[in-house]
Amino acid sequence: MGMKTIYLYLKNVDEESLVAFLSIYPGISLLGRKDNLIKLGIDDEEAMNLQEFRELVIQELYHDFTAFVAPSSLDFPIDDVLPCLERLNVGVYHIEQVIPEIVFLKLTDIKNTLKNYYTQLVGSDTIDSVLGFIKENQNASKASKRLFMHRNTLNYRLDHFMMKTGIDIKSFQGALALYLLYRA
Image (cartoon, rainbow, N blue to C red; front, side, top):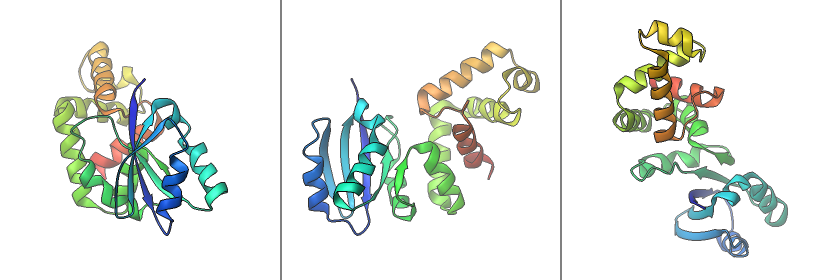
């Protein structure tokens, strides 16, 4: 069983009562606190129920927060992404939901950092293949013809991208996030 890192951004919330509330859950461990930000380690099972946990905090403490489930990559530029949390609405966000917000809020420094990160992580050929796949309405046959590559090669690159980044580009949300990141 793995652990996910979650960052909670608190707006007008009593930090102490929230931390005390978190302590009753065995699958959640407090990893750090700074300003209005709490860093948590959460078991994978608990991470799946993060929305339910948020609703419970709202019911019991009358507090709400913005939660960001950090990608599991060790070299993800988390310090560059965290400042945008204060500009997001309350809720639970994964990278697929954060990227469109970064683009729409015109946070170009963070956008460029993420573009560079993903390009270095998987390579520009893989990024071009993924964008070609998205442009062809996520149709691998049409995309492989347009990109002049074998379909198995395209599928390998798509799987490689999803494995390395954790972004499911075969879903609408993942495809939209990546398309906006590179084309908006």
